[in-house]
Image (cartoon, rainbow, N blue to C red; front, side):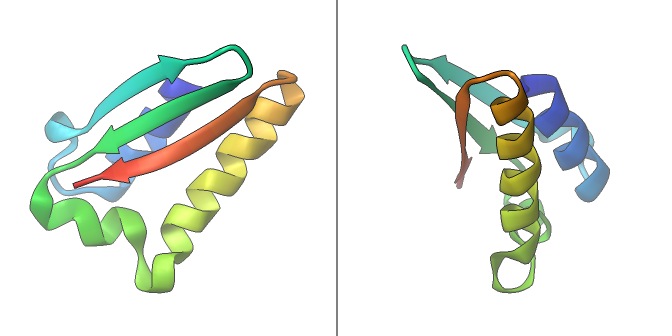
Length: 76
């Protein structure tokens, strides 16, 4: 799941080398913290959060298939 979010985020931003993902695994839920360059933050979030919502939907579909739960947090 970490690789999936990494590929999506790198495709959206101008500075793909600055994309970082911190994965925190719990018993049931996996939290993925996404960090991008400050000027790329708007591109990852999108207008009215639509891009972030779409990324979360894809992540949730993948997690459901793996019988897990995942949360994507975009960190400034």
